[in-house]
Length: 291
Image 1 (tube, rainbow, N blue to C red):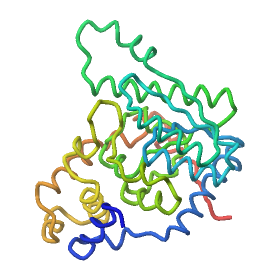
Image 2 (image 1 turned 120 degrees about the vertical axis):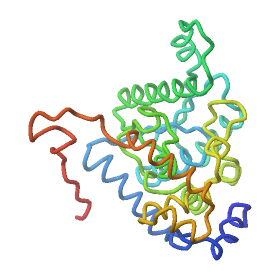
Image 3 (image 1 turned 90 degrees about the horizontal axis):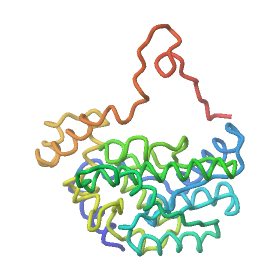
């Protein structure tokens, strides 16, 4: 049993909601494979998919699902390192590609990012560089997708999306996202089920944009705690009710404040409505996956 399994097991009977978040992994895998096949091939008419393979657990799970759904030869992975990217991330991305038999190319983005930022007279802070890196990677993915007549796949999970822990018009840009309704802890569980190498599943989550940076140090809370609180908030529990169930007020506030402050990042651009057919406001295409 991994350290993360031990944490989840230890808290299951001490904290609420943990048991509710357990999933049937066979059913979840089947549903996500069907989702990818339906969205990529049936609804959008593509045969191939591209995915940024960072060496992290989210992109690895996406690659594993895509290979199962579309076949390895239809999946094109891209490593897009910046000068500060770790060698371990590159090695883990290669490990995924070797295990799955998918295509893998490396497109360094250092020159493109630095070429954009070199005109700034002031020193550019790390998080700004990170945002440019995230958006530059999407330029690479969409360009390569166009070349291959393929569709880019997103890799962001529900925890990142709800906490606003992603680059707007960067990580969230791809039109299809198989992991968007899975909390980070659920992605870890799915990764183990799919056979993602343990070196990837067990390492601390990081965007690998700044040396030494980790997700949980940025967020100020562990994903295990954040996911449970998120699930409670999304299920309609108030902060007071969550505190009555054992979460500290400080932990609740970290999560709640991030959710409230980043609502705009989860929306389409706000349109000034002049008619009753404003795109994204009234004109919403219904999607029905039941066949």
